[in-house]
Image 1 (cartoon, rainbow, N blue to C red):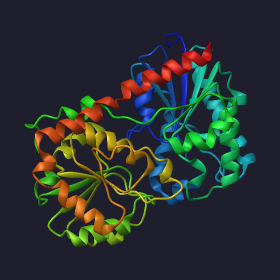
Image 2: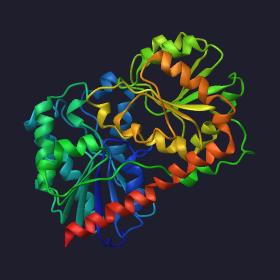
Image 3: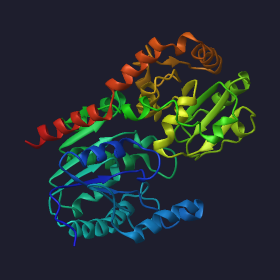
Length: 387
């Protein structure tokens, strides 16, 4: 029999637990040490998604496993397969959330608690709430969800998000743009930017062996860590890589878009995803780090976690002019075009850009933006609004 739990934090996330570590992972790990037992609801696979991506079958397998404890006070739950087009048609989302709720309620009974708080990172959770008796509802807006490409109806997604914000006792957002567009929905909307695991990225041992796949790659390396999707400016990167044949461009992360224009370049290396624990060793080998996002409605509201991680490692950073990055111009180089990026990349490869003083300055910014500090702020707001 499972021991009785005190209070559950039901986290509704768009990211699987194993994979790229995003805000939900960092916040929920801290939630599990702040008086909650976390029930982390992983994203479901639709009935047709394995036809497009066979890796989605893993989500089906995880669903068959049921409740899994992965860390102290953190349980994973994979939902059952659901209907497609839930972000296009509200009726389908309601059916899906009812299906998901059956699995959630079974897990809550197994954990022997009726005290549940819901912490959602997704607008679709608004239709889960009628089936879950929640004491508190927290919505954390980490993206402009209605601006994603794909099979969505922007009006449907926006309506779900507005209803969720109005239902929640506390709302957070990662970027000023997100706050400015949503403040009218609720009086309890607070800005909490992203952060970094400072110690994880700052304290890598110089004696740790270089990853084998990096050994043969010529130096210097301009590196990127994160998902490679349609918000990455691949054309810009191709032009920069062609202009700097003496620089190796290394990308660590899953690829979810067409990258043929990069693969054909001899100085570009797409290595795929690597475990979070290994990322500091890869970062150690980068001479400079990239945030090559397109500038559009979606990315204007992005507060990139990778910026804080790069800075925690003390590395020079080159970024396109994202709104949330411009505030860090003192420690981040900004480039709006391929010629500008070529110029600033060359600048970051200089000796002065990598001296000890410059490194300490960047790391001090990384340390000031830790996940511990972010979560403490979130808890204070949650407790304040619960009174």
